[in-house]
Amino acid sequence: MMIKVEKLKKTFGENEVLKDINLDVEKQEVVVVIGPSGSGKSTLLRCINQLETITSGHVFIEGTDISDKNANINKIREDVGMVFQQFNLFPHMTVLDNIMLAPTKVKKVNKDKAKMKAMDLLGKVGLAEKADAYPDSLSGGQKQRIAIARALAMEPKMMLFDEPTSALDPEMVGEVLDVMKQLAEDGMTMVVVTHEMGFAREVGDRVVFMDGGYIVEENEPKKLFEQPQEERTKAFLSKVL
Amino acid sequence: MGVNPLDIIREYLPFLASGTLFTIGFSLGGIIFGTILGLFICFGKRIRNKLLRAPFVCYITFFRGTPLYVQILIIHFGLVPLIFHQSNGILAGVIALSLNEAAYIAEVFRAGIQSIDEGQTEAARSLGMDRFQAMRYVILPQAVRRVLPPMGNEFISLIKDSSLIAAIAAPELTYWAQAMGAQYAIVWTPYLTISFIYLILTLTMSYLVNRLERRMATK
Ligand SMILES: Nc1ncnc2c1ncn2[C@@H]1O[C@H](COP(=O)(O)OP(=O)(O)OP(=O)(O)O)[C@@H](O)[C@H]1O
Ligand SMILES: [Mg+2]
Image 1 (tube, rainbow over the protein chains, first blue to last red):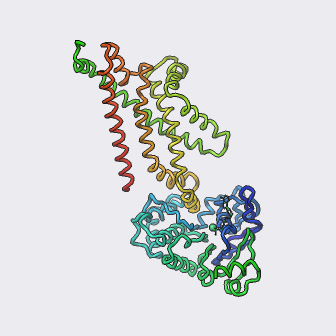
Image 2 (image 1 turned 90 degrees about the vertical axis):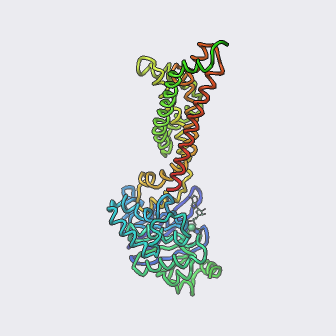
Image 3 (image 1 turned 30 degrees about the horizontal axis):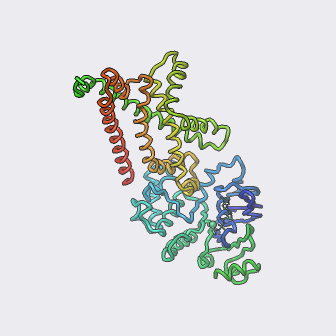
């Protein structure tokens, strides 16, 4: 089991955003999380790598309870890559430095090796010629592909994606989804929050529908989209499909 | 009216020259120590624990909320004699300017760090960096660029404010202008002369900061 979420609760002040979340993600599985705005999808992802502290319950990463005070969260995060809606590239560094920073500073990989790895990843996301460019000069789709390469440079065992294509112009969505699809085919364990139902159907092993801080329903993509069991799932799908 | 102003300036030239050097020295001292201490205080103020943070908050409140002139008097007549058992205008001047500057620099830095998007820290942390690494490699380099203009303003203020330490007989520019004015009972010549010199110093500072800004922007 790569990720195990157990009775997870998260509150912001009075507002209980995650009410009782239980979720297992197997090795090499691609889990797609869908649901209306404000249902807690981002919060769930952010709890999985402790960008938000958990109010109660547990999150296990490869069996390690990350909410445990003794857990080395920095070490665990090395194994859990994250891709954000807003890319969050480091604007003061070139693309290459963006990708090399964490491997060289956190893992102490030597520069030549890190650079080779970075160039290799840039090739994989189709942006080798942008190595020396600064993020500001790139399109949204290119930025997001760089952000994915940056996360992959740490050689994570699993990746979290929070609406990676929501900030993109429509014509750039495809290039990012293609990279993610390739990643899934290569066997990466992924949790993807997205509104791209086509991607969910094609790439997802399982789709999780969240609403109001609960996981309302989860199933194989085909079954969930074609035979939703819960009223709330039906209502949501009728709006987005 | 008998004496030619140019003759007076010529007579005082060595003192004006050394006064200028002292003014530059006080300013540089204040800038260097003030910036180092200011950074430290800025991080102190970011501590989450209220009790540990309190001294830094008090420090900033005191040094920004009271007149620099009063701080100079306290340090010259109180602090320096207390520690070194004798007064020393030069030492007191450097200490006062540095401590005062640090409070302002701390606030400038705090604002700079706060202006960097939260997503930058989150991206850094999600890559496995600890708080220190995220600050050092991701947040500070961006913040430094952003605080350069307000820092430049603080430095220029500091050059001008250093004239206040004439009051404790530190031999900088304003001190010698006062001496000149007193000896010959004149006003315009000494104060216009040092105004001119201060202008050169502040304009040079703003030129340097501007250049640095441009260099960092193109990088
Ligand atoms: N840092 C925070 N402080 C307070 N409330 C928050 C915080 N982050 C999220 N929330 C609240 O938690 C709820 C769920 O937010 P979340 O971002 O997880 O939803 P989401 O499902 O990702 O929505 P979207 O599709 O709009 O991204 C919202 O009501 C939001 O206002
Ligand atoms: Mg969200």
